[in-house]
Amino acid sequence: MLPRKRIGITMGDPAGVGSEITAKILTYDKISDLCIPIVIGGAKAIRQGFEVIRADPNFEVVHDLEGVLEPGKNYVYDLDNISLSDYSFGQVSGEAGRAAGESIEVAIELAMENKIDAIVTNPIHKESFNLGGYGERFPGHTEMLAALTGAKSYCMMLVCRNLRVCHVTTHVSLLDALTKYITTERILEVIRLADGVCRELGIKEPLIGVAGINPHSGEHGLFGDEEQRIIIPALEQAAELGIKAEGPVPADTLFSKAKGGWYDAVVAMYHDQGHIPCKFDGFVYDQQTQRWSMTGVNVTLGLPIIRTSVDHGTAFGKAGKGTADQRSLFEAVKFAIELVKGASS
Image (tube, rainbow, N blue to C red; front, side):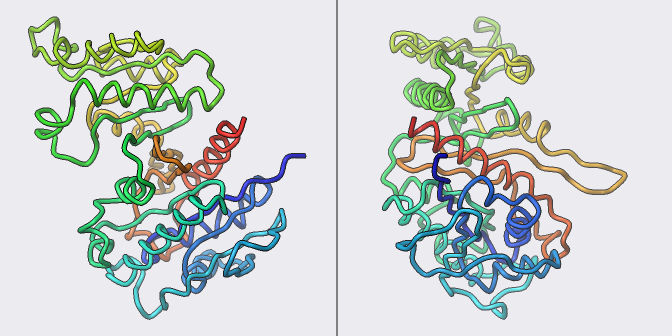
């Protein structure tokens, strides 16, 4: 029987739903059957999530990972870095942002030292993160992970069931994406990352679908020539590297084909082009129960460590109420385990 992988789960912003959904996957989904979960952050804040769901805290507090961690148990790597009086559910707080940032930093250190096999991150709140002293250096999770691991070539991939969408650009204005950041070199870089992760997942000959930029992919220059000038050269270079990439495909048909299994991964040119189909498929609102179900996973490709995340925010409006859906976090843990196995095979 193979040893269970050590999966580090960051606390996220304690004023959000992170502690609640973490308590739910530890209690209801019993992720300790799949891995050795190690929640990284302040034990007091993490314990609060169990109080929200009215469950007994079922974790052991540790301050180092040198000893033997037993399969079947949950652990909290206690940073003791925030008090319950420092924040309130649903409220912006510099102290909460600082504590969330510290938990990410420690998780990265542990992963780089091979003390954990992967990182799964709970959501942070950008305003609190900024007030906590991290925003000036890092716009968000992805940039922080890249900077602290020294990664030069990386991208965001959203996963929802069989949709795997890799982004050429993300958190920049649409105008800047179109005029500054969508380049042949960057598109080729993301195609290579998409091909690589598919192979890690055991897909021997991946087919990557590459989205166009313009309506109908420009209609041979009628609606814009960016496809011919920028995207097609990247596809030609990918073919020279032995990568099977098809495109540029009009975005309004690309994602339907990908969802049906035509493509193993998709390359989207900008944030909303890739995010909308994933969240349309993975975020489902039930009018009768007035609740959301969320199953998407956010993955950072190109890092020297494995990182997955929930595909939603801190949900301040739900924080502390016990109604948050934990499925995105559960899926993020499962996908991290899958990537760890792929990387070690």
